[in-house]
Image 1: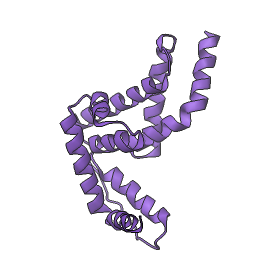
Image 2: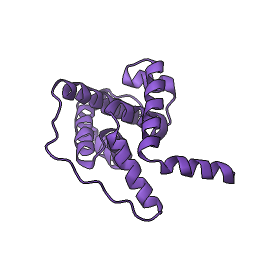
Image 3: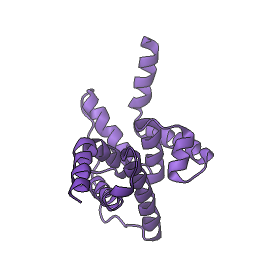
Image 4: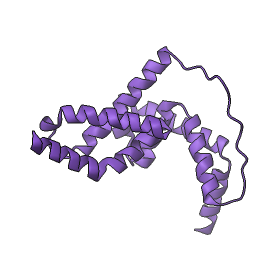
Length: 170
């Protein structure tokens, strides 16, 4: 049992930060990401002796499935916001402002669209791999990706400006 604990601890120490980044991209905030990752690691620990080979894809699959299950639970019992936050003023033109705008825009996306973008662009998975992980069709992945990117362009118009400037300088 001590050997299993040592292997698991080494895995978490080595890959924990990368897994937290994936969980953050899925959940949209630090606290939810930490909870999501903690639950996934607890499930992986329970099955650790049976996990063969690289454990990271196994833990990521747990993350994606738990996030999807969470959407389904929340869809049955939606949260009702009690107050709205004031809009944040946009200042300056540095990249940190753009990153904050993009982060807020990603949080505004529905969870499925956020998951599709995470898998396709952060994890660099194919449409087929993304569909398999989310348990949907490839057409759903393509349409959710297109809708999510269109919404991001609408919420953060500076993204289109940067893209067109980058294409002109190439």
